[in-house]
Length: 432
Ligand code: UDX
Image (tube, rainbow, N blue to C red; front, side, top):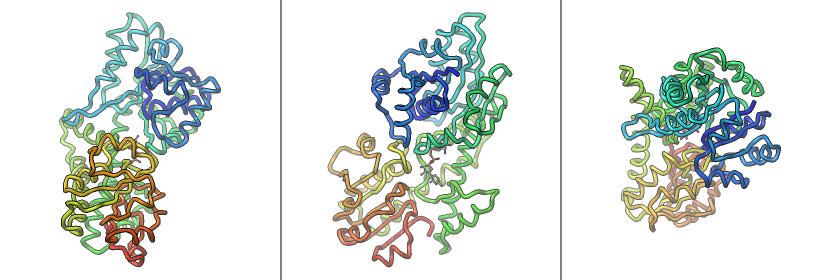
């Protein structure tokens, strides 16, 4: 198939590269001239394992190209994917201006039948609005179909998630685009769920909110476990082996962050309210997540007492492992809270340092350390804020010797409490 992807953020770029990889001809469109120039020169604007090689390979094979022109993308393609941002507004509802703008651009360039697919995460009924908008602004008599095809990829695992999806959701309002959508996705070998557009749009918000709910459930259990002297990892392991529950997304820690869960939860709560339902369950999911950070900071304060002028090492700035993304990162939130209390930080992240510089104060409160093993030198405490697996290889012997006091707060439960005590650390984690 010939495919245009409008928007080369995480979702758009990875989707474009993976579609090209399975043999489709893909043109990625972005309004940002610098981004297009970077991509054309073989550069990648984000860190995502496996993506750079995939882009390079498919550009060389002539299946993947980049342009700034929406009209060119549409002229060259049978199917147009919309993958532009849907950022949150201050009240939690979704800013739909990028989607509306793209719908109007598509309408202006439409010369003959095209399938327009929405991949961005959008409120239910957006497909109907996009169809109305295109109809209003395009030349009369041109046929088109609008399809909802939500993306479920996780940052850091995006290529894998896209190449091996659990399922593909296709929401349609007529049968005409179904064959083309099946042809696009056939090489991925996943079950394809064909449903109506509104249901497809709801599946995305329902799935992400449920995953966030699982994490908040684990974090609430962590509070109970601490009070009861139990171990949350043992409890969630025992729960997760029940195949009806499943082991994933039950890791207690500093709570969830990133550009999806917090935003999608707020959006779903706001959409539900507009539809006349107060989704209190999801409001509680948000509250548990917010409380988790407050509890963790209190743990640090209770142990160190005065934070002013304390030197604290923070391992992890990204919102999770395998990514350089620091947007809505619990680790950044934690750093800001510690800095506000007067602490001086030494921070390290395998990928997120550059992007963190824009979010943390640019003064003497934060020192960026390039070597993971040097970060704790001379510190009063060390905090693990992100679940990067390589943090488990930290030189603990060196940390214990070089720290002023060997106080260790593990916000992601990466280490074994008994072993850490044996090594001489004053060690605290979450729910254990
Ligand atoms: C999420 C969804 O997983 C994906 O399907 C959707 O398309 C986009 O949103 P993403 O935000 O990239 O993906 O990351 P994810 O791996 O889901 O992690 C989200 C947050 O939850 C991270 O901050 C992570 O640290 C946290 N998390 C995850 C936990 O605290 N515990 C867990 O058990 C799992």
